Image 1 (cartoon, rainbow, N blue to C red):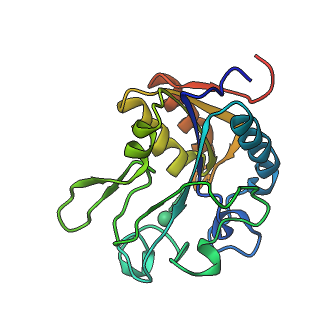
Image 2: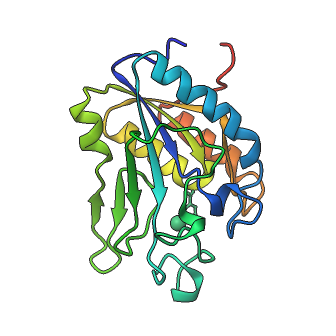
Length: 201
Ligand code: VGL
Ligand code: ZN
């Protein structure tokens, strides 16, 4: 598990009920299959002194992110509701830092930045400062969903200069269009990410 060391961070994206539970409002196919892999990775990361950070999609009841308000998505991950809670199968000690995104109605998918829908400006979350204060150089991104928040988070990590890995068996895609998951991984490869399975290699 050479990918985890004290200058590495494992960013676990949006493993929340609305995405990962069969009763969720925006279920990501295959999410249930990747949670055990994610748990194995977070355990390995902690064991080797890497920082583990969780992200949470955290929307107000009304946001231009939702179809009913002019956006692209069914209502999901509304702050303080069941759908926004971390999935109960995700094993994480209570002291694990959590970065929430979208709380002020911002749009966008990355754990690092959010788009203010009034000004169009990209505003940073706490993720980059958190990694910086921990002396992180290498970032591993896993979670949900490959074709949205995982992709955007990993692309931002690359842009910020982190050596970035995405583990293909620890992510699952929305696949609104068939092939979106694979296309996202290809885009990440082309952008310089190390895209590989958690097993072997
Ligand atoms: C996500 C769609 C809408 C994600 C978040 O976590 O990938 N996808 N909001
Ligand atoms: Zn969302």
